[in-house]
Length: 311
Image 1: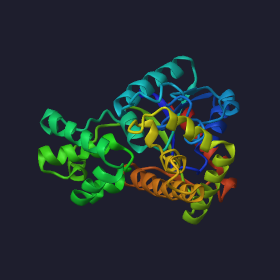
Image 2: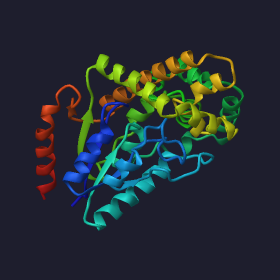
Image 3: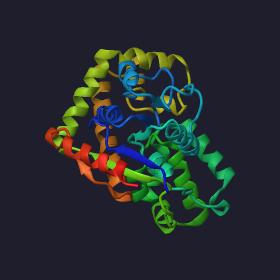
Image 4: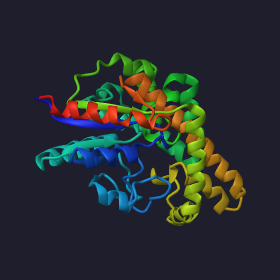
C-alpha cells in the first residue's frame, strides 16, 4: 500500500498556509514546506513563512533549515521531504505538504529525473553559470525564451539552475526542453496523495498579492532585505528571491522605494500566474476557492476525512 499524504498547492497569497494548519489540527497532521525559499534561515518576511505562532500550532519541516549561502536543489528537497514523510508516518501522524514550487512537488510525488548522461555538458553549463554571474537575472532567461518559449513560460527567471538546465538540454540534444520533458514518460505516483489546489478569481488574487506586499513592508521586509544585501552574496539563490532583489536598487540608491515596491507586486503577480500555469498544465488537481467561497470548507474537510479513512 502506498503511503497517504495530503498535498496543498496553488499560487502565492491564496491561503495555503492557513489551510494546512487547519487540516493539521483537524487530522493530527504535520506540515512539510514545499517552497524553494522558505528553507533559508533568516528570510522570514519575504518568503511568507508560517509565523512562530503558526508553527507552534503544527510541527513544520523544511523551514529555516539551511544557511543563505548554501544552494538547494530539487534533489535535496526530494530526499529530505521523503525522509520527513517517513518520519511523520512513523509517528502516527498525517504528512501535509504545502507549497507553490511546482517542480519540488512533482519531484516529490514522482520518481522522475530530467534525463541521462547524454543530455549533460559540464563545460557548457559552467559557461552559462559564468554568463549568469556577469549579467542580470533575465539574461539567460531571455535566451531560453528565444529558443523555447513554452519552457520559459514555466520557468521563473530567478530559477537560474532550471534555466541553465533547459539551455543545456537544448544545447546537447537539439530538442526544446518543453518537448524533451513531455517525451519522458512520467512514472506512477509514489504516494497515495490527496491533492488540493487553491485558487481564486484573478483580480481578487492580484489584489491580495498587492496588499500582502504592503503588509510585508510594514512587518520589516526592507530591513530583512538590507540584512541580506549586507551579506554580499548577490548571485546566491537566496538573494534572487522576489521581495529582496527588487529592494536592492533602493538600498543602492538607484530607485525610489515606491517603484521597488511596485516591482515586487508586479513580479509576485507574474510569479502567481506562472505557478497556476505549471500546476494546471502538468498535474491533474481539483481546485477550490476558499477565498470567495469559505462555506465550501466543510465539504473539503469531509473529503479529506473520507480519503484518510479509505484503506
